[in-house]
Length: 196
Image 1 (spheres, helix red, strand yellow):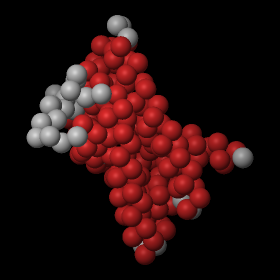
Image 2 (tube, rainbow, N blue to C red):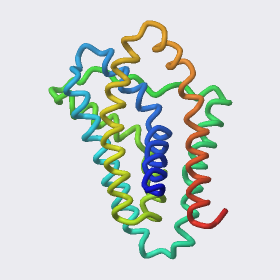
Image 3 (cartoon, helix red, strand yellow):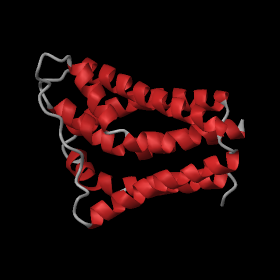
Image 4 (cartoon, rainbow, N blue to C red):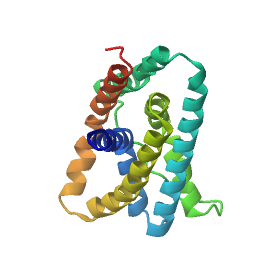
């Protein structure tokens, strides 16, 4: 039971660290009158499903690699976190681009999904090494936690955007915490693999 709680907590931390910038993208969609709530939720679930599936496929390919070598993939989120820290220091750490008008007759949900996937490079970089060191049942638990948090993220983005004082404060500072979360997840991967 204790290990299940730890796995759920790790999954929640993984999701939060890799999707904090996605929260700002969701807020931008909710602020755009061209997108309706159900389209945003459906599109975000579709995009997260694509990222989860791609990460799972890449982690299965990693089964041919010795387990001790897989742990070194923890360097990927550490590298992503360090790059984001560098970008912040260099003044390039602005929040992700605000999605524009859906245009071209593309359904709004597909626009949200496309932006979610395009913004998900760090998701794959973090999820692949984690999926590779856990069992199928544990990855299933992670997927269920991600599904719950995807819905919570949509609800949170909508609620934060509607709040008169929280919205501006979170938009101003939230992106500063993402790099540290990625670095912590990378260190956790190295620790779980026995490298640290």
